[in-house]
Length: 390
Ligand code: FAD
Image (cartoon, rainbow, N blue to C red; front, side):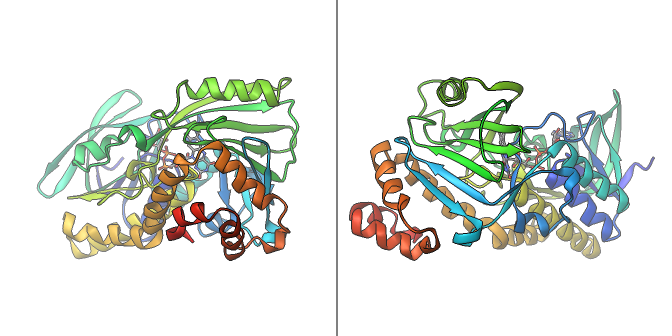
């Protein structure tokens, strides 16, 4: 095996595999390393993505699509329901993935494109030497050093590459959602619908979700903002399940943190770029990060190619990558962070009134303008508060 690479990608999640695939397609020598024995396992995700986002990178394949989604139902604390339907409201349709298979598929695409892929291999040390990086890896228990011109840190929410490179991605207390999710069977739902329960009663500073996985199972999970929650995320979820799905069976448990930081200033340092959760690329409102991770991985790989062409791996050169991800989705991170902070402050009666005023509206009229008009009639104060987002 080689010890000298153009690009070493750390982490084979969606960000890392797309980065490795794209860089290999550009003709670079690429190594993709993943610390886990099996790519994609265990899953720490509710697995929901928009169709449009996904199809930019891969052709949908029934092998790793668990459900196709046509509707989203948002449920307020006093049970007012707002249904957004793909057919009538022109909303995005989506998929619930089988990430165990999806992540493995992406890694295989990277390998097919020519990247070397090593599982059960962790990045454990990092030093810069003669303008390159000496990355220490532990593969199947054995330590060795790899030289890389560029390291792409796609190592997820607990990124070590970010710390080694000195890129500030610190999460303050109000910048990480604490999540728990159960894969459940023996519960009732429409298998083409995702459900969101909002309000402090359910999930302070976050929401509860149900994402179908086929007809018989669903991901039922919660994210809460620890600074607003009096109890643990699990406590709120268990109470919800007792009330809504008393006969449900839990077959898998997932815990994890989702960064809701908004956009960081820079995701680059000399020889290093961060992509995906490592760079806090998750959406602050939904907590969704798969599509942004893939986009970021793609942009990072293109920037790596250009840097290697120019023989310049400096932070200044790699800022091209910052420009690319910011242009692509950086603005929506900033905007949704602001909106998330506002939404966290809405109390349950306000959410109920909001949902109530939308509940009876003919669905084909559910345009943003129409929404704004209805809200303005009923709640002038609220509209004022949200004016910059409309
Ligand atoms: P990851 O998928 O986390 O991959 C990082 C990889 O790096 C891991 O495989 C890890 O093992 C590896 N790694 C870490 N350190 C090292 C090391 N030192 N050496 C080698 N390898 C290393 N997003 C959505 O879009 N839709 C959802 O419905 C959704 N639901 C979620 C629900 C929960 C409960 C949680 C916690 C997250 C959810 N997300 C969702 C977010 C989504 O899971 C992440 O944004 C996405 O996985 C980010 O991809 P990534 O490639 O950046 O990182």
